Length: 148
Image (tube, rainbow, N blue to C red; front, side, top):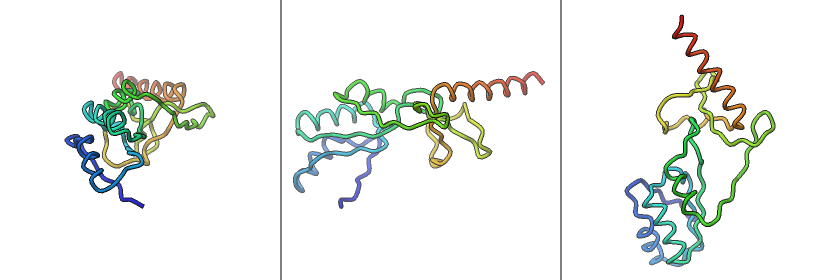
């Protein structure tokens, strides 16, 4: 068992991996929360795979709770040679492709910062259809409050 190493937006992943090779060979590089990678870090991972010949596996969300691509996901989609989707199922039985943020009362949130620290228990995987229906319900409620 090897402990996980952490990274932030300033980490040069290529240099980091190259330095880790001083300690011994690496079988692969696993990246979790890959949606938070920067463009430079995605390029670093491509260099790790191409120049150091180390397989790279990156796991992360494609889109945020508003349905927008995370920057790291955008660059991974553009630069990855192979994509494997890990499927989840919506409560209706369809393939879940969206990540809905829920408030403490269980209602869907459609506005706010892209990243919310903590609160991982407040996300629900949904198919696009259910996501759109619930988002429309929230928007309609907000419009009713404005009109009142």
